Length: 170
Image (tube, rainbow, N blue to C red; front, side, top):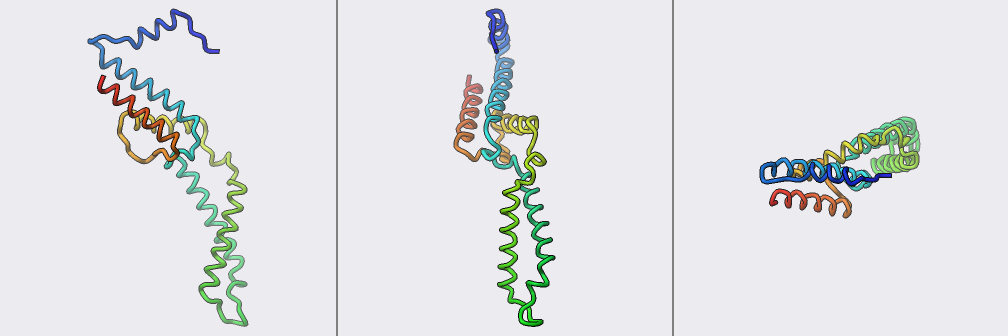
């Protein structure tokens, strides 16, 4: 349990206390502190609340789907192109069969989820991604490589940006 004694609170107050001489030091410390706090808060959100975070996961799933579809098509091609002797099926049928095979593989991949532990980022990697996003938001950079998608993530990013603006104006 996290308990503070009076002397601990006094030390924290003295650390963040500022005078006109060390005003910029106070702002830097506060910016760093808010960045860490918001990183921890962002950590409670899911990867689906941000876009750009899970690009690797999506890429691996797409590649697995593509390889499985190619293997399935290779196995079924001779049957697909046989129609009353040696005539080939029209392009629409082969496209339809490719589409059906792709949907079946997508369903299998979603069901298995590619053994989530093999592509799920570690807690440290999640914190690093959130810390990166928090620094970009806190410093008002806005690169756009990671951006909030859900309403709660957007609200938190707006609050963090407003805290930074207030810190600049103070």
